Amino acid sequence: MKEILIKREEPIFPISVAAKLLDISVHTLRMYEREGLLIAFKKNSNRRLFSKEDIKRIECIRRSINELKISINGIKAIYSLIPCWDIIKCSAEDRKKCPAFNGHNKPCWSYDHTGKIDDQSARHAEKQNCRNCDVYKKYTDCSDIKELIKSNLELSLE
Image (cartoon, rainbow, N blue to C red; front, side, top):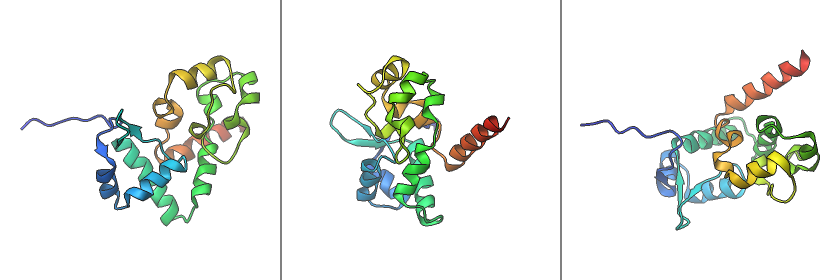
């Protein structure tokens, strides 16, 4: 039998399967999405699908909640520390107007960027679904976020 290779970012799991894989309820997955902790892929029919990367992100969220006792608001605050402005190379002018740059209580992908910023950041937000953005895609694992913050700290200390 030929092995089937599926990309890690390919949304293939319906919400019920994702919930079963994670041993949580569908309601919990929907709540995480509503809280801005994740972005589910939605088909035209509005059915949610999840990828292997989504599963990895949710496992990180679950460990943070259950083992580390971090609240959902705490996780959102941690996600807000991801320097999206640096990753997508926002201008200084865009940063002044950007709610993600100026806020500290939710991840950049939770904000409506259109109409609030201009230049490259607005083009980025309009042309690219946040689910496909490097800010969202690259930091699915808890250790990746910590390494990013550590590397930025090391750069600022130089």
